[in-house]
Image (tube, rainbow, N blue to C red; front, side, top):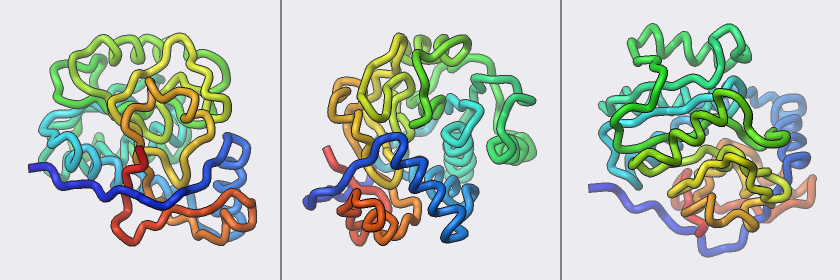
Length: 234
């Protein structure tokens, strides 16, 4: 049986895309908490939510070329380690991946996790195509995978924000993922309040951002992760 996910009863802050970029910058440049560490936290928590919320046994991870895709591929590793039959569908050619996501793909290939061209018959689709850096409508293969996911019978679990939704304004692009649930990272994104139909159930994951970072930026309060590293907000 799926494990219950604790619910946050206290208010939490939110960030737009510019503030989230600043959070990431402070983590890396000021605190020395590297992208790889944050990606590992994101992917591990995403895999855990997939299992606890959806009781998943088969999954397809749709992975973009940047940090969001890297988090999705990290989740694919944790899902495979947990015995979930997991495949990865890439939105870009392997030579177009950024260095850290490329490293995650290399690990999956050495593990024998299938890298496939289409979603196939699965119980859950994980959307890790585009994160808070979205600029305009999704295009090309990314757009095609969003359409494929929305037309599939399986529910979609999005990482950070549904692909196609603007993190700052909540503008819903054409196309955009319609998720059953979204696991946002660190803090909710301001645009989520305007795109509730696409976000679905909202969860937040601890990626090891110290509350002092939010205090310095004036965007608190921070989530209280004492009940667990993933909390349900809505």
